[in-house]
Image (tube, rainbow, N blue to C red):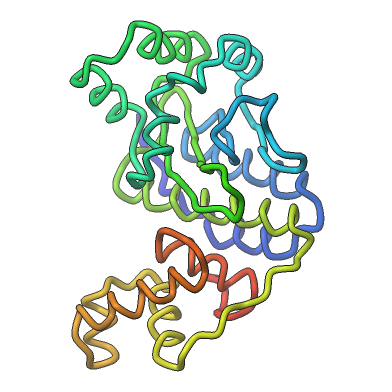
Length: 245
């Protein structure tokens, strides 16, 4: 299958910035992901539906899959969800399945993948996100033939982060206050938001890579997030840096 470049990050980011209803983000997310071969998605806490806090947990799952997943309580054993709960960074469903097999996962755990295939969910993307409540949050996308190329995965990470932060922003009623960043941290954050690596930022600002990473760590701590991508998205949503469009 010929893959199309997943090039709608900017348009989706703008929608997340302007959205006043979760429906605005949900409908745009579904359409945006379709170009990457994604037909099913979830954004929110990694718990059973019955345990979701009010206003949290957004679904765009394949018809019938949400009901079957909830009834079987797959969230308790799903290697994909368990990967996100360990906060080990973005991954693919295939990689999660391979790890589960290597580590001797139960038949019930592996059955989640078999049942997903019945709904044309053969592979996908998963990443943890750091929320403001005690629960572990995550973003997952899946489909029959999703774009899991290097570019596709990078774009999915950006789309997923904007989706999560957009929904969070609505759930919190737009009340988040921007943290104070030093002038140097602002420079590092702005270049990080442009997708520059720590080495590239160091070359631009004439500072060492270790210094860049120290500033990025401080930025992540101030925003209460686990990745610089999530910090950049929150900064775009609160107006600290310009959104990528």
